[in-house]
Image (cartoon, rainbow, N blue to C red; front, side):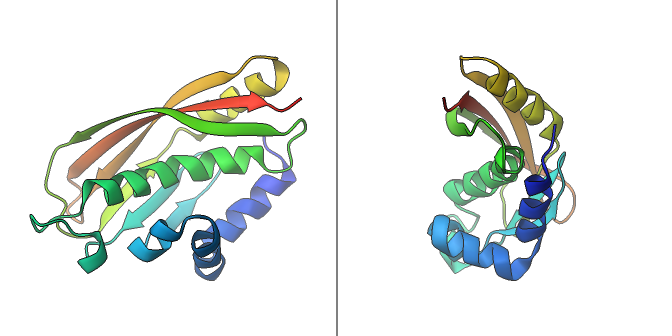
Amino acid sequence: MSFPAASTFLDRVRSPFKLRLFLLAKLPAAFLAGLSVKEATENTCMVTVPYRWFTQNPFRSTYFACLAMAAELSTGVLAMAQLQGSRPAVSMLITGMEARFLKKATGTTWFTCADGAKIAKAVASARAADAGEAVTVVSTGRNAAGEVVAEFAFTWSFRAKR
């Protein structure tokens, strides 16, 4: 279930200028790391993290925390879109994370989450019930060659505010 405000939110996220303002105000570390949203629909979100001085580790690859930040944002955009303009309001919180690092990230890494439908279902369940609803979604990071660099599984918890 989507709301008109979800479309407006996704339009803002797709605008590079508006996204940079949002990151600067709400997620300054993501702003400094240079995270960028390349695609954002109700079902899919793709976020990139560049390999540069600010995001590197001593081993000449992207620092794991920067990879996790991009992966989380790819899932968080989908969740925030579902919460826009909803009544009753719903809170969201990450309650778990698992990660697998499969290859050294030495260039730009693209994280894609295609679990928007799972998030929408969990948010709808949380709105309808007095209890919280949890859902685990996956974000996969790939390098320029299309090879999987890392996989993250985030468990989001949603609870209606009453």
